[in-house]
Image 1: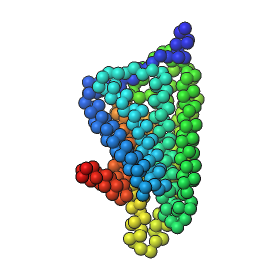
Image 2: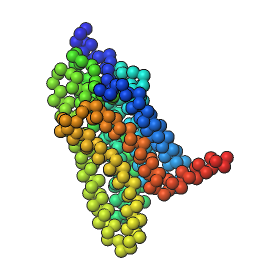
Image 3: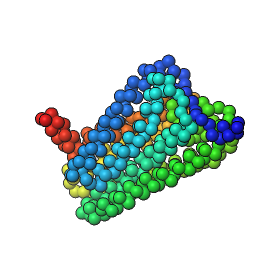
Length: 313
């Protein structure tokens, strides 16, 4: 029975942010505001893209996919975080922990793949403008979307089984606000070298390959832009990439900073790393619709039209 409970633990305890327990109520307030902004912003974005025929273009299909993934990421982590900080709801079932871990990492890998697809979209739009509609046909877009979901699913699914095979007999207390693969695996007294190798290297190498392809795409884009004779045409071409570049920087910069801080920043207090990790999963989903709303003229126009119609009714 003891061994059975080790391999099938009923639950884990999420400590929250160690050392900052007395500030938990105050810390939860900004996360609640950020979560509301993320839900409202991404839902409005999805609504506009769905109902407006003029937004049924490849770029906006990828944007709707990004908004859906951001909703998954926010909803996977923030409600449990708020329950922990405000109501002391620290317990999470083993199956709930595995589910949260899967969707957390799945969203991360999927976001990276979507940003790569959006970079490809901008590459085709700027380097082959006359062939844009013939290259990015609805069938090609559908295949790309299915490939993104399938790749992300099969990359992260082994993490679930790698955790299920481990015994958890010593401790079930997770010094964090959510379940992530390596953090949970370290609670086991068994050998976790396979977990470390797969859970860290495979998703990281996947994301690094996405970054390399995005960089190559923008090298070709910049070369095509600077070959344009008109300065106005250059500015117009670059402006179409502005929102995408902002989202790329918001996504990858804190992600790599967090990875490097956990690997080399041993002098950084653990509560600071955990707090930063929570802001990382909460802030980008809230800012992405704002960035695209401010920098994309078509979305701006439809957003203003939507609310002007609401006011006249």
